Every structure is written in C-alpha cells, then in structure tokens.
Length: 240
Image (cartoon, rainbow, N blue to C red):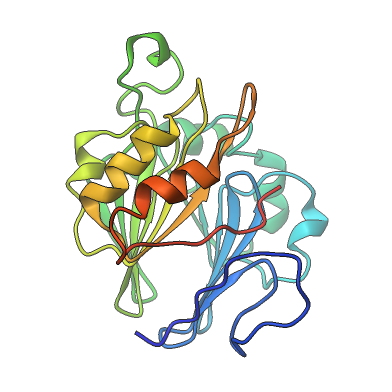
C-alpha cells in the first residue's frame, strides 16, 4: 500500500506530499478524509464528495464541494442538523439515513440495518449500531441508527456511528479504514473499542466521537492497546 499515514501534530512540514494538514489522504485510492468536529467529516474521492453526519457551523464546510451524498447515522443533535442538510442539499444530492432521520428531514433514502445501495460506483451497506451495556441501553436502541460500510475505489471504509463493541462490528472483515467511536457513557470505553479493533483488524483506525461526559477519551491508551497488532495503524485527526 502506498497510502500516506498522517499522525496529526502541529507541524508545518510533512514528509508526505500527499498528506493534508489535519486530514488524511490515501494517494493510491485517491480518497481524502477531512474531520470537521466530533462525528462530522467529509470524504472526497475522484469526483464525489460525501458529508458524514454534518452538524455545526456551515462555514466549516465552505472549502469543500457541495455533497453528492449526505450520510447520517442517527438523529441525535451531534449527528443530525436538519438546517445544515437543507443548506447543503442540492438537486442531485442523495440523503441517506435510518427511518427516524429521513422522517425528520422529510426527504431522502431510508436504509435499515443490512440494506445495501449503490450510488455513483460507491457501494453503501448499513450496519447495526446500538448499546449493549445495561446502564447505556437508553442511549442507542438496536435498529434506530446505522453504521455504514462504504466501498470506494476498492477500499472498504467503516463508520461506526454510536455503538458499543457489538458482534456485527467484531465480525467485520477486510476493512481498510475504520472510524470508531469511544466516549462514555454514550457509546463504549477505550478498552471496548480497542478490543473490537483488534478483532476485526482494519488497516487504519481513526478514533472519532471521543468527547464524553467527563472530557476526552484516553487516545494514548487506545493506541497502546491496539499496538498489540503492529499491522493496525492508529491515525489521530484534528477533531477538537
């Protein structure tokens, strides 16, 4: 693989010509991941642009092309802004989400867990996301939200949404890039996230959605735990 791995640190010069400050580019597959904040990010590949869970200030998206796809995991305020969806949505934009999201927006493509769709040579599969720990069950019920596996330019990209280390995550295979949440009490602990990652073995994992009720999750601990498998790269982007 000739992809450039960028560990985000405040330096002005990088040895990778294809790396972008505070983002990540796979130069071979021509895919760029650009974090916005918390759970919101932009995927760019060839002539397609995908906004994932866009929330926050619309100005943060000004440097990107208008989205071909808006992909939403669930309808919590830190994942869905109907106002932003209406601002960003163009005539040809495809909005995708679970039923609760599409009902709230009033337009778009509803995907249930397990559903698949192809849009402009991009394959999208909706995966489960839910809580399993008794004291967290009220946060994310099974079937109400989606994670996603996207196949773009022969790369498989997993977006966890808000979930614990569910069997469906652990059973994933052949994932090139994984965006994995970890914040208590809403999703899962660093230990749960690392354990799942070690089981499904993505080539690169991006910790995201790691601001919890008591501050930020311990990413250094996450990296240390994942380092048990030297073939998995942890890439920390600038989310906050």
